[in-house]
Length: 64
Image (tube, rainbow, N blue to C red):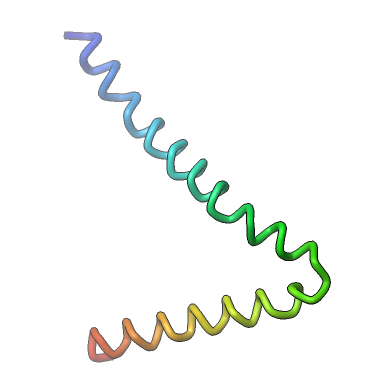
């Protein structure tokens, strides 16, 4: 029974490391884009627009 709880206690660490690894893999292309001079201006603008539209959609859906 002790092995069962030991295995159960490992799942949160596995989950956190899996999510962190996935985020690093997803964000790596954006980091590479920032090395190109003309994209250093475009990428932040696109990200700001994306989060602005996302905020507006969520605010409209929730009635804020």
